[in-house]
Length: 52
Image (tube, rainbow, N blue to C red; front, side):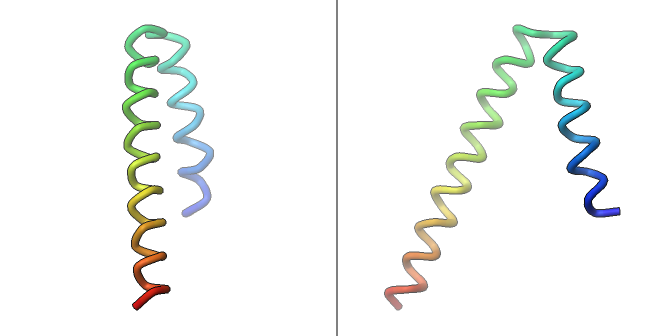
C-alpha cells in the first residue's frame, strides 16, 4: 500500500502539469524548492549527528 503513493503522486502531478501548465510549473518549482530545502536540512542534521 505504501508503494502505491509513489505511483499515484507522479500521475496526478503529470496530469496537473498537462492541464494547467503555467500553474503546475510554479507549483513544481515550489515543490522542488521545498524538497531541496528538506534535503539540505536533513543533510545538515546528518552532519551534525556525525560530529556530535
